[in-house]
Length: 485
Image 1 (cartoon, rainbow, N blue to C red):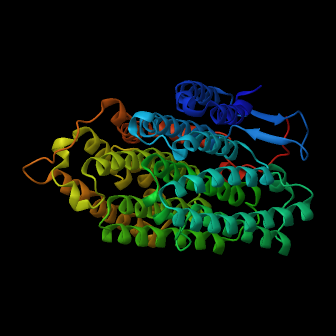
Image 2: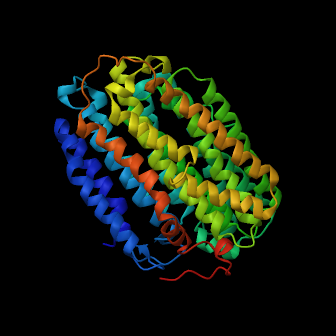
Image 3: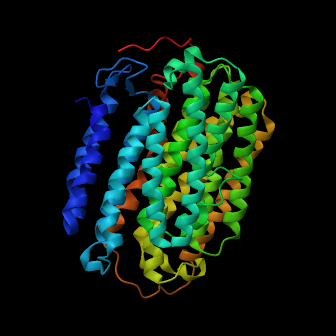
């Protein structure tokens, strides 16, 4: 089997084993972590044009797995998040923690199901199989959200169902119209007629619900704020990225010649509003996890703000690299922030920001992890978030997009306001609250992820190079070619 197959099959195999392992399921993460990290490294080392047809069936019947620039960046980043969250949850859902319940048993199969679905979503080009991956990830995400609040989980389920049905309707329209749903073939055959435009519209609408882009974000804050810290980290770092990646493939690969400039600016405008609205709502929050959840709403806006910057650029490689760098940096930083917030909330037995007074003295490592993640999310140098937002700002100024440039600057300032607030409270006070000593192994997960998010700023050129590998024709500037084996 190729590494592309194994990146999908291995997590699903771990899921089956964890279902039968019972209480020993959590130990499987100690085997899964090095195995998946090795496969992710293998993926990055593959030749730039690496692809594999599952089962040796030719297109359009076959399923093409492809190691393009998106996969080479997001699959390893996703693996790092799952490994860190898994090791963090190894203690969170252990018998000694007193949480040996059905929730603890089910977390592990759900983690592997989400892992396999995410990898498949980054690698495949078949739009129907992307629907399958969306459902795999959504199923796991809904169950994880329900661990904290049944009401939030049910709300998420109903909204996710609507998004899935809308996407599936679009896939059916394309299958009937073109006799294929492979993105690489649609890039050659697609034409701007009514069925195609209708399919793109309903698919994008369904995916925007999954991605929680403003104003379709209503399910995200309650689901992320109520879920256990490991679940919140995965929901915010990984789940919302899959819908975005599929939109990216639809608009800049499958239908690059069909999508109209007005539609691109509509998504960019929604992204700009998401940055402003999410930031203002984060500033208003009095609870830590709610603040971090609304921060996700704001940070997702940057991903869509890049759409018009990519579409209108003379050299779209820079904004293309920026959007992928932001996706990776946000993935690592947000997972770290939710894990660190979980430790801080548990220590003070309260989730209000005011409860954190003096906590930096009692929990310096957790506070440091939160602070490093905040540095990347705010876009301060030398973090990965800074690299991404600098490239976006440079593209906006170069194109004369004053509004987008202003939103980028204002968003960064607002991010500093709401992220400095919990840090200032934690650093305030002359006395430290009485909490248990930090477990170094437990705090290592958020600290490592946050440090990686900052360190990405030193690897800016590597990120740009990886993201440009096998870039879509709309970005690479070359005409699409008939895919081969």
